[in-house]
Length: 328
Image (cartoon, rainbow, N blue to C red; front, side, top):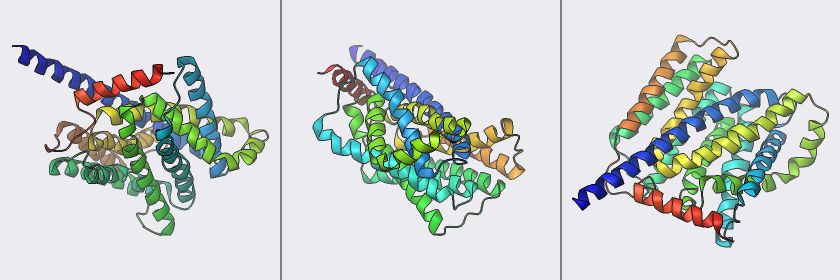
């Protein structure tokens, strides 16, 4: 009887952790989808590197206030290289590569290339022995990727892999590397801590662009500057924090599949906010994206690979995070 109760308790804890992960992933994709509209406004007055600095400056201000209010502990010295690396690869270089590539690659094509990040996540997770996704789950992810391709073509994109597009491919790999690189740290730090530390690291890496960004912020239209600062609050401070929660409680393939929803949400936002009527092909692509994401969430991984999404591991991570936040 005791064993049965323990199993029920463990199953309940895992179900609650999964619900938290799904909710966090849902918030993330909405936050990240809003970034595309804000970027379109910000780049009217600022260079891509200036937008990146303003983005992480505002994110650092928000997260810094939260850190002071919660009396967040500093990271351990042995984790500083990893956090600095995540800030460089997952924030600074990712944003610079994406902005540079999007200036030379059609937006729809760029969104398709970036949407390959979940595939790279599965490749890295399998290589690192963090997950063993089933063939059905991989197939469902490819269905979503096909949907993103239809959205790109439906919006006038050309799926051509030229040198600028390869830079966007590099950004896609960086996004996947950031997602997987933070998973080991989630056993010692909370999602909020990971976001705070990596954002401050990114701000330091982007410091050379600060003078020009500040100078232009004072003379350019306020709405363009507000759009750049918005990027730091919602897509970065909120979006990356909820993404860390999703990566803690979900397998890489399950969490990564949500990223396919970003182009679909952008399509819906363009329709409702900007009045851009989607083509029939783009709508069909959106349907395929949703079908693929739902299928991924319903399918199970193959046994034999460890994952941070299991209930005992999640509980252990929360215990470590609580101690990290209250330690001197």
